[in-house]
Length: 260
DNA sequence: CATGGTGTTTACAG
DNA sequence: GCTGTAAACACCAT
Image (cartoon, rainbow, N blue to C red; front, side, top):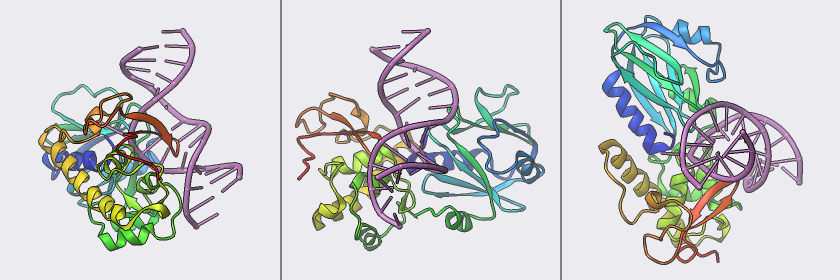
């Protein structure tokens, strides 16, 4: 559940289920997940309550009524599960019981997720050198980021220190929509392509975010739903090819997205 | 410094 | 059973 649109969904889920309820019990799992001693999480959360949430890139900040807040990073398999029964879900790494006896677990089978305690999101952003949220980013700032970069455009889009929120899946989607080969060097992009990439970042993320929140399917013109080797290109220009770009599995259409 | 490859962890498909 | 792969980032080498 990890790129910006999925985290936006988790935010909405959290807002609808766990705000303004006193936490009466805290249970923690694998200490690998916890970025400060587990006792600190217990101390901060017990007898406290969440009062608001904020998203930055792939991070979700759950503001506590007293003393800062909890920051969730979902890794590849993290998610929130809210429920009203006793049985703790499998892979729970943090389970909170509220005063009304409802409960929430942060589950993560692959343990790539991370939980932090932070004063506020602004400070957390600074400490962890997280870039501008992809949906807050303005075009001139985007163009600035591209200046003097020489690596692949895909690598840049996935660099959270430059732009926060885009991962492997939607980097591929943005580049497919703009007909740009994922291995294109940033300094070889035309102004037109740069502008297209900026616009598609906003469009793809908004579109997917809405779809995730509303439980709708993605447009038929999107690569994401057919993201597999030898799938038919949604523009019917050929077959989707699989390759590796900066170590990540990458899907693209060799006919639509040519490397100049 | 910027860039990109490897390691991490566990489930699942083939 | 084994192999390869998966929406994440941290870390290391170049």
